[in-house]
Length: 186
Image: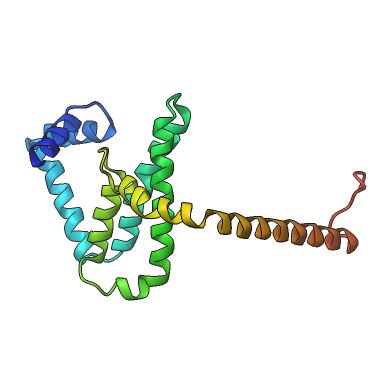
């Protein structure tokens, strides 16, 4: 497994993209191989996630920026398999963030929490068949959803109906008090 990761890392470093261009410029000016620079950058990020101020922001950026970029590319591609992959990631990401919202007051006290969270998010977006979002969806989210789908559909339908009625009521009240006008000449 480590050999496969090393091969992927080497392949990435030999691709043409903004990160490897930047690493190439640093390598040219310092003489330090880009593999060593990239490994050092990962080490600094890892240490920062453990000890740094703002580790939560860095972890959330890691879990959001790359997946958002790749999701946009997936939407724009003709292949729909990548759409499903990234929709699955966002479902798991959303559930994780919701759970974290209610438990963060306890979790952030645990040493290495943000490093563990970041590793979890990286696992969820990993380009392997056993990535975290697929595993969590298949073994946790999907069985729960299938078991409770009818009840959840009823709740969503009721909430949608109530929200629509509330929006119509607020709009009618706004028109009554003159916040909105039907006369286009005003």
